[in-house]
Length: 487
Image 1 (cartoon, one colour):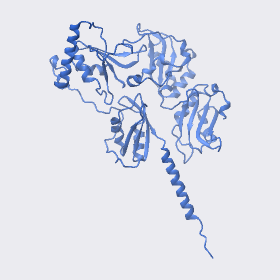
Image 2 (cartoon, helix red, strand yellow; image 1 turned 90 degrees about the vertical axis):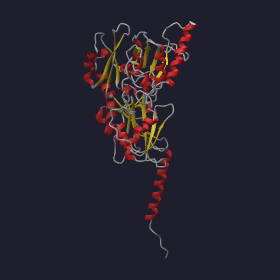
Image 3 (cartoon, one colour; image 1 turned 180 degrees about the horizontal axis):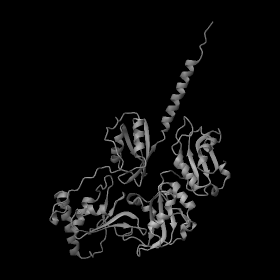
Image 4 (cartoon, rainbow, N blue to C red; image 1 turned 180 degrees about the vertical axis):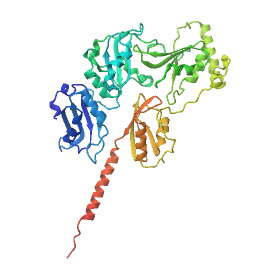
């Protein structure tokens, strides 16, 4: 396929119907067609070649007639070998040329659809209608925050991209189903730090132009970014922020260990999704000060540091006497925090009963069955394999990652790329790296989902291997060359 002669509208119509393949350079168009034609009608195949040598660059594109065909091919063929002696291929959905980014089988954006529904629909009705196209992870109806009434809009998330694509293609056209995609992946630093994993569902964050006709209203949560966040302010109200998903019950249970808790509420957007924040209010200033000093930076769940900040509770603080009283109470509580009894001794004891025993949660919380701890490899060991890890919504701390990856043996180093949600893990044994990848890929640890895959070898390593191969070839040639004898 001579791609340059095709208009971009052809390449991206329908959306997500074009695959991006990373293969061995020996893989031909005929081999690709042979393995991918069983998934549906192939409209074009383009093997990218060097302009001078006309040799394959190991990159190809496959254009299907339907998005569901492309998604199914991606799910089935990613990681397969197309020919004996070749490396496993990588298969992605090729994004439109304007964005230039490719998406893999683990990309959650390919599994969520946005639909228009009758306002009488319940979540069960929504699930019942769309379950015919695949297994549903959840279905949500967008409601008016004030009245609680349905807005006639909803989300359905499937387990696989092919299921979402099939639903879009085959559901009743009155639902006007489309893929729900965030406007941008480059969220602000604050959102990356404290956003909940579902915070990107908000319809106002959609980039599809079809949604511009939908009316979402202008509701906002109780506390917005424009509220007063003053480091000099000391109040009975606190805002708790977490980058990992936590429930209201978990936050309440933690802050209720300190006597005087009046109120705890998770902050949600107008569509009912958690913003990763909770508002806490105590009935006295001393408890609020103690909670702020003790729990700000506290790891809960392990590996996730909570941020606790004072927010304005609306009380009048213009009185000089009131200011002095507030400062006195704050100073007394600060002194008690740093010089008095430990937290468990003080918590709840002032209410007339002993503090409940708080079970110590393990540092690593996951459903994955992990091996026991093993020693790390000596620092001077040779790196035999590198793993590439993608984190969502944010990277885990290095010490937690070392705790996880050292359990498979011969771990050398864990390295996080600054400013990005990715990192590398180095092993001194290929089998141990393979075991870690097989166990942890796609799993959630401490509220963070990880994609674990083989990293491309460093350029210097490739050059070293090539030099070694050339040297060995020369030696073999010398050994097998016939000797010439003089007369």
